Figure 1 (cartoon, rainbow, N blue to C red):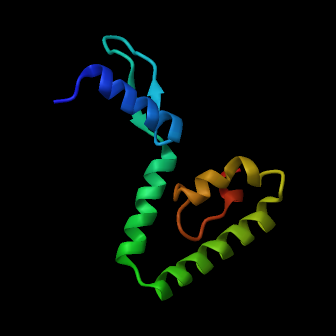
Figure 2: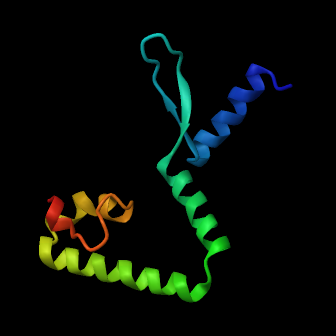
Length: 102
């Protein structure tokens, strides 16, 4: 069994590495931790690498690059930086552009 002190120390290491973040206490809850978006993306990338062949990955990357290029053209550079995370996280549906959400 791990002591609370050891658990907090290990969580601190994960915070420093960027895999978890501290969350502030809310009503009726103590402070806690949650995974960062970065750690979730890295896990998903590992899953894709394990389950998808190189040719399929290359095709998907090319398709996403084209969506990004079209979005930059349609939305203009001034809109792109604030919305790129939505596009890259999958919040923008396939075929949609950032300008649809700008």
